[in-house]
Length: 137
Image (cartoon, rainbow, N blue to C red; front, side, top):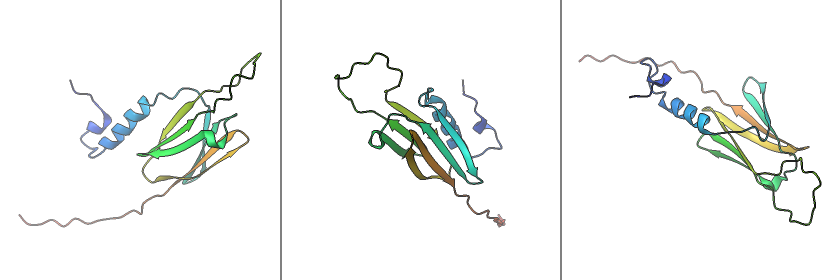
């Protein structure tokens, strides 16, 4: 039995890559940690903000892997000299990923007040009208 996808529609030629991106997004398994916001800052700019309280800049890693923005966090072990009476602040590693559309690039990232801001910009290609010559066969 064949799996039906929207890219198998006869009017959507060459959209197989979009199907693969949708599958990858579904399989990413992102849980609720760390919480994040996505803002549209302008017509062609966005900002992803992750709440990464307790993480130092050196404990965070941002990579772009095949149109997938991946943010990883791993806190260094402090040791066993501290005794917690209550431990409510999450100190676990995480990986959060976002699939970026073609033309969306990372403009920069900044860590301030426990929030990691990642700015994105979309560069739209110019619209080109092309006339195709019909040859006699």
